[in-house]
Length: 99
Image (cartoon, rainbow, N blue to C red; front, side, top):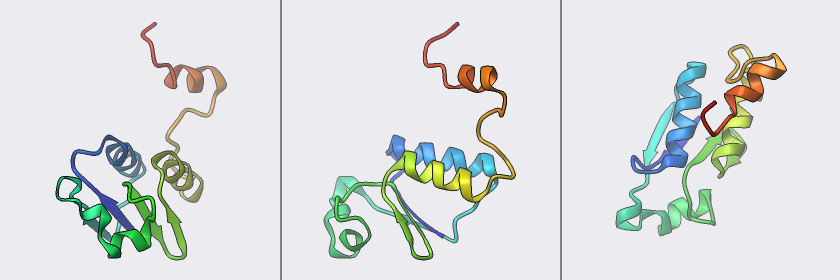
């Protein structure tokens, strides 16, 4: 499993949080420096033609959207859930505004 990342990316941060909560460590983390324009280099454009991060490569699976990556990881590794199973606590965990 390879994660393409940039330290200032909030979307990548979301994926890293999900991975940490599930105890998943990628085999490789590739830093794509957006400030230097590395997302436009041919090697990364082959991974993600949209030139955005994060990107996750897991065997033949290539995902380029943080929410899709988190859902993929949640389904692939269901043993440690990211949200409560019960409906009310699950909805409460998704709350954006304070109570």
